[in-house]
Length: 265
Ligand code: SAM
Image (tube, rainbow, N blue to C red; front, side, top):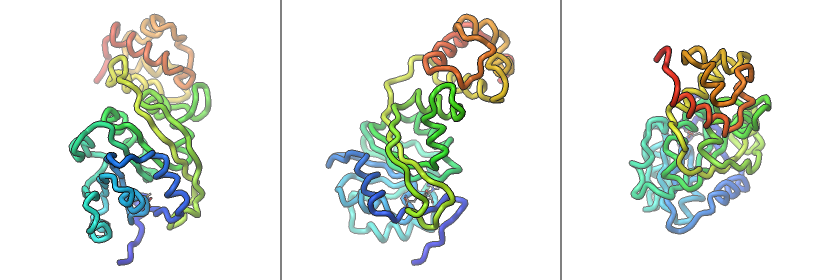
């Protein structure tokens, strides 16, 4: 069956065997592993993974790919397919044992931020995640404080995970050939966050709402006493959000939880 790649679902299928080997190698597979793959597509990574003997649960949104994948892996008892949107999945509910799970995905650009947010929220069931994103997205994910790519994504990703940038992948490794390079990263979940994660996400998101504004002016939008909480967290209100370290974000969240009232929401 001939498959026409859908641009709307970010379908650029991997065909470079050495890249596939490196991605699967980065998962450090053990026989007893359960691996979730988001977006198996035409099965490029899936095939190599299934051959290792791991329990592989694939989550594919594109209904048209279902018969193809089911036929391709019909003799593989360690393969199962969930035809749904990965953005709505409770990952714990699709595996037998929701701990130490590994996850692999070559992700479409348009869902990188929401999928990463979901993985952060559900990170406690995972031991290792190997993800491929557009290279520019990875530059934002790994950006250090006070660099131009530092933003909401960098802060929330680095709070949830230890992140290793593994390697870059040239456009020619995919069909159809995309305009951009991709990068592969490995994420290891950090222990539970010390603090209130919902407030943390809200504070970080609001602080980056308008990048040119100071952190004080951004936070004033939702917190009455933004000025005094910044002071109690020892953060100068004229700084911009991208200059804050992870520790400073944690301190600021704690100060806000302790001492503020919301002006809205
Ligand atoms: N893993 C395959 C490969 O490397 O060749 C395909 C990668 S392709 C870049 C992205 C895959 O994610 C496609 O199969 C696409 O249909 C699927 N996809 C897109 N959005 C999705 C979503 N919200 N939930 C699950 N799968 C999705």
